[in-house]
Length: 230
Image 1: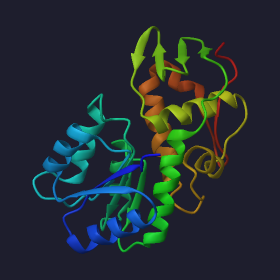
Image 2: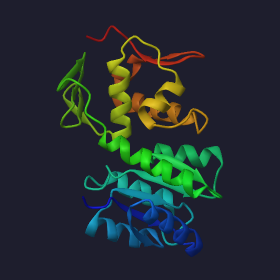
Image 3: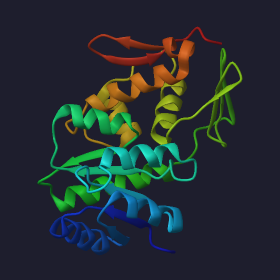
Image 4: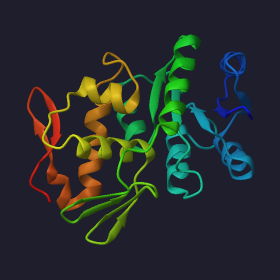
């Protein structure tokens, strides 16, 4: 089987070589670039299975690179792990809201980074949930085609947003704690970054419009999809 391809976007040569060494040691095929413009050129020419993206880059910062990727229909499904020295919560939230799948702060453990890479790639390979078409009121989900519509208007979702939506709907009426969602949707430990769940729930509600009200916050416990949308 061909090796999974990782694009490393990092202008610090020491860090890029460290990441590349550990990724290749873990069995991945790596390409390393130093700025966002070159990264977008490489992605358009050869694609990637996963992107490790620094924020502080020349020419285009990592946030802008992430935004451009997620707005491109051919590239938006490529998972992104942001790797950066900027560990403030607001930076993490911005990255996640732009569609990044995970966030690792420098200095980092190469072993932990590779575990994150493995977990993010595994999500994309998970089996489709049962049922070809899911209907909840005005909401219709075509599972095999990853197509979501509300009142016949199609809505774009990232792979992780789609998986979160499906998980909530499959467990209609049952409270899902943040820890449970981090484990089942992100394959992440609960102590990694629980705000990830809140950020993605906010995005789901915004994208779903009137159907966003079906995602109920249960104070102190988590979230659930209400039972009265059929």
